[in-house]
Length: 263
Image 1 (cartoon, rainbow, N blue to C red):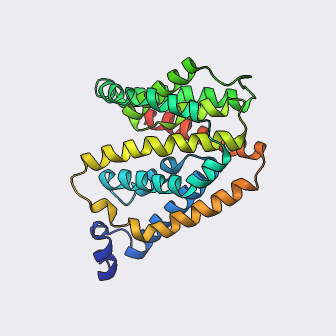
Image 2: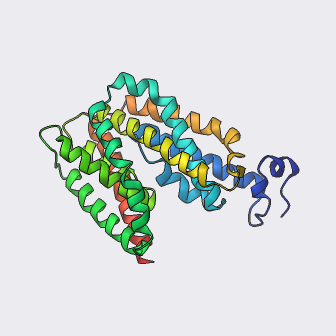
């Protein structure tokens, strides 16, 4: 099937696709971008969890991953003023970042020597059990110590190096703390925004071309719309519903990792 001249010029990497018309492919990318940005804005995380699997259906990994990270950064920047107003637990965020970054190279080395399926299974099981404990009501009565914060950051960086998954340890860290939903969400988003700059820099440095950036201007409007509506929904949502959504996303992530490891 021939791709329309206008679309193929704007999104040249879509031209080889023969199973779908050009407009349906663009609509697919737009819908995925909107939904992922809505969830990310509401919960504080989850853009890559939702966007990358959908992007990979129509884009190769070398385009899908940096595009997803770029949009993740854009959502974080768009919400940064509201994050600051919400009250970020900067002490924890600082220690998390300082301990995460040195462990990224370690994770990369480890991933080259251990089968990915085994790592995915291990991460999936740990995440599932941890989320189940949170859903059953597990909380720490006091703000985590500096040692626990450093350990969480190290685990985040290690997992980031292994599979690009900085999020799970940090999400579990804040969701089990006595901090409320507003401060927890703001702190998670501050950490992810700063760590994503680091991840985006690595992706750009490793990229062989800038072809992945072509869809960005067109899809940006859907990302910003999803960000606005997701934040608006968060403001009107209570603590209980917020936690249900977050736990649901974590269960989806853990189960998808276990299934992927088993296939």
